[in-house]
View 1: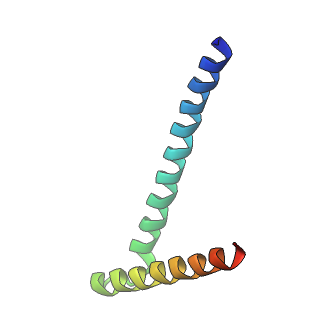
View 2 (view 1 turned 180 degrees about the vertical axis):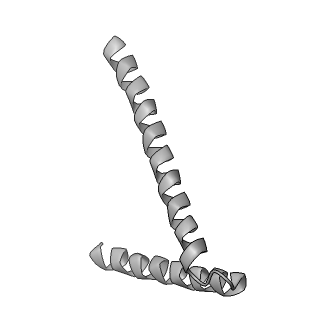
Length: 68
C-alpha cells in the first residue's frame, strides 16, 4: 500500500514537471513568433499562425488515419 502511495505522489510530481515544461516551451515559441514572424503586422502574424496551425493539424490527422 505504501508503495502505491509513493508511486502516486511521484506521478503527480512528474505530471507537474512535464506540464510546466510544456507551458514554458510554448511560451518560448510564441515569444519567438512575436519577435520574428511579421513583428510589425499583428493581423498578418495571427493569420499566418492560424493557417500554419490548421495545416499541421490536418496533416497529422491525415497521417494518423492512414497509420490505423
